Image (cartoon, rainbow, N blue to C red; front, side):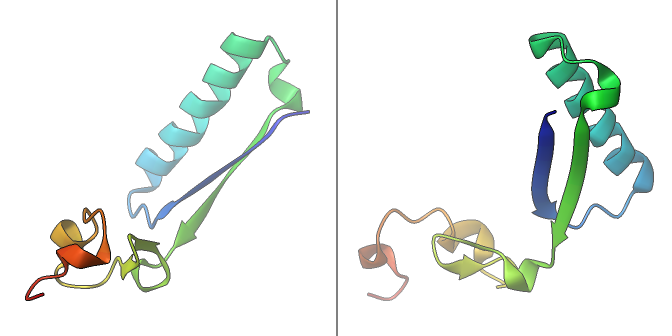
Amino acid sequence: MPVIQISTFEIKDQEKAQALLEEVTAAMHRVTGVPLDKISCFLTEVAPARWADAGVVGSAPDFPTRSRRKSYDEEPGS
């Protein structure tokens, strides 16, 4: 029985969250042939302040740029 876990920032639109769950479940079914009633899929929504890319929390104002850094040597002002 496949169990699919998706971790993401909060999805505020319920219809989008539901569509994501349905599409991922459908893909698992299509690719593996596992019956739909044996596939579980769930979302874990994480607050941006509790999520980090490149060591930068998602709630940081400069997240879009700093989270793309390749090393700490790329820190602004260094």
